[in-house]
Structures are given as structure tokens and as C-alpha cells.
Length: 541
Image 1 (tube, rainbow, N blue to C red):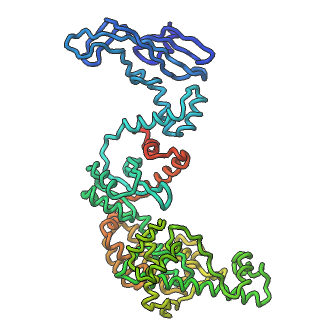
Image 2: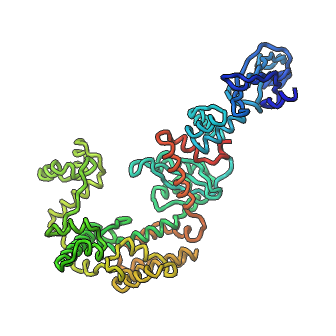
Image 3: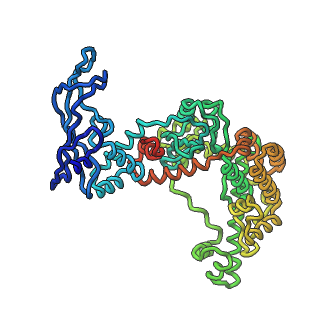
């Protein structure tokens, strides 16, 4: 009997026998208590009404599954005023009502489901001697996540978006920055749902977010008492993008504007300047390759001297003018796909953007109204006689060459070097910075502003920011002016980012983990399952 007691799944269960079968593994026969206790009135009863049998899956022994055949009594309640007439033995420490496995097995199923997912968990459980399907594992995981909720108050939350499908649909992740854990996952990126979630947590005092205005508006509506904190990484990244945009005027146009603001500059004129600078850069490269070829150099020698690929050099030397860039294949998301129809409407006098947008959508256009307006804007400027010529002052600056290789320093490299402190530069990078300072007055001014901005962020003092914004606006560098004016519009959140220690780094890390889980689960990664696996194990106990 002492040996049989070790097979008991928990208190209140008496083991009657143990047998080893060929198909089912170990089978443990057990019975419940000899006395029943009514779950409503708590009265003890010895009047048996009948019997019921439960089959529970238990922990394996020697790698073989164990099944507990549990015989339970159904009792009559002896209390005359009790509404319940009969009841069955309850074993809360052994198994939940209607469960098909013991609590300790359910904990293992939930733990493996949270750590590995459905099919990997199924394979591991099969090897351990606890055969459970992947559907059962995921169902147990979702059930645990839905029942258990965190009761502690949330004070500091980080909000960021993540993509269900890049550039198509997005979700929202909420992270408790104090506990460094995910709180919730929303299946969309909208002001309404984010504000509703924030209203349901009135204890929130600080909200950390990126530069997205959507979450700023949601915080103002859902948690007006909270202090907003702009992410410092995105502040520096926006500054680098502004520097890259400015450097595009001296080389090929690879950057793009952060935001458009008509009060600062005509964005269309700025884009035309960047395009002309890009064309001039391609023409210079074309002339240089032909000049080297006329000197009698081979294709390999030209490739060694210039750094360009030999195949590209061979292609360019076949033309008498720089080859045009390949145009992407048109599809219904582009207004150029319906160019003939739009041109006819334009010729007939239908030139209202909204009217044309409605008409072209009837023909299958799936793009945005803003994309259509870009095409129509070019036609309007052509009608008004606006030439694409740019004042010569826009093309005065020449691309700065690397002192070692002689290649033009790209705007991306120049922007990265501009925000990097002198002490962190390598010798080669320091020589590039010196060359950029000598060849570009704009770079000198932008590096001075960038070093001051980094000093303000690291100094954790916000008062110098106002003077920095004024100097940036007075610099007359269009992208830097735009960046400074955007900072002024979001000045409270930027000041909090400088003075407070919170940032969105933890949220970015959790998004990387979410992407890993989503890709590992393929099509089964729905909102409910993603949330169950992203929440810490404490939520699912």
C-alpha cells in the first residue's frame, strides 16, 4: 500500500491499483473520499446517490503515459434548506471540473505552449510521454491567458506599432516599462482603440512613444493626466534624416523629407532641386567613365580606380548619354496606370482632384488620393508655365570627395558622420569629416548643431533646447529648419525625453520578439494567440 500511495495524483484520492497495459501505458485505479461536502451549504453527507467515473491524464512514469481512472461518488445533500439536491465530489487540488488532465499536467502544457508554441510543444510532449495535440496546447494557452489578469497598477507605459503586413496593416503593443514586460497587444493602429485602452488604465502617469502623432493624439484623449515622452532614438534619427536630405543637394538624392510644411519652404521646389542634383551627379559619373576609357584604360582598371562594378561600367560605356533609370512595372496602385484615362478627363476639363479620384476608383484604382494629387500637381504646374529650372544657387555646391578613394561621399555616410562625436570616429572617418568640413559650409553648420543637440540630450537639461531651436531655424537650411519647427510643436514631449529616463527601447525589443513568434507560428499567429505568448508567464499561471 505504501508503494501505491506514490501513484496518487493528490490529496483526497485513494489509489486502488496500478496496472501496465500494452496500449495505454500505466493505468491507475483510484477512488474519491468517503464523505461528500456540499459546495453550496458546506454540509457533510454520507448518503450516496450514485457513481461517476473520470479519466485523467497524469504525469508519465518511465517515459510511458499514465491514466488515472478516478471513481467519484455522487451524494445527496442532507440540508433541507439547500437548493442543491445532489452533488459530485470536488477535487480542486487534483483537476478542474470537466478537465481531462490533472492540474500538474495542465501547468506543463501551458508552460510549453507559452515557450515553444503548438507543434514544437506537441513533439516535445510526445517525447516526454504526455501525448497532447497542438490544438490542445494552444487552446490551453489561450484559456489561461483569458482567465488570469494582472492586478497591479501600471504607472509607466511604452506604446509602439508593429506590422501585421509591412506597409499594409499594423497593430499596437503596450509595454510596462517599469516591469519590462508586455501588458497588451491591440490588433490595429488607431486613435480610438489606443485611447480606449488608456482610459481603462487610469493609473498611468507617463506614456513613452515615438514621433508618431497618432499615439500623441490617443494619449491626449485617453490619458490627459499622463506626461508624454518622445523617444530619444527617434529624435536623433529624425535629425540624421534631415541632415541626409540637406546633403542630397550636393550629391545623388537618396533621402526623403521627414515632414512637409508649407510655411517653411515650397516642397515641390525642394524636390526638383534634389532631382536636378541627382541628374548632374549621374552626368559627372558618365563623363568621368568615358574620359578614363579614352585614355586607353581597360574596364578592369576603370573599375579599380572608380570603385564601380565592371558590368555597370561596360553598360554605361555603350551609351552616348547617361541611361535612364528603369521604371517600375505599373499596377493599379499607381495613378500612372490610368494615365490615358486621366489625360482625357483633364483635356475635357474635369480637373477636380476629388472628382477624378472617384472616377478612377471606379476603374480599379487602389492607390491613395495623395498619390493621385502628385500626378495632377505636376500637370497643374506645367499649365501655369512653371519650368523645372532651378536657380543656379541651388547647384553651387559640389559633391565632396573621399580624400583616400576619390569617390563622392554619399549623403547617407555624411549624415551618419555628422551626428557622430569626434572621439568615436576612426582615423578614416575623421579624415572624411575634415574633407566634408572643407568642402561644404552646410555640413559645418549641421555638425555644430548636431553636436549641440547630442549634448542637450546627454546633459538631461531641457532649457538649452529653446536656444538650439532658434539657431536651427536661423541656419536657413531647409530640412534643419523643418526639423526644428516640428520639435517646437512637440516641445513638451521632447523636454520630457531630455529630463526623464524613460524611452521606447524596451518596446522596440519586445516588437523584435513579437516578430520572431509571429513568423515562427506562420498563419496561426492571430491576435489572441500572439497576446497569450507575448504576455509574461505570470499572466498565465
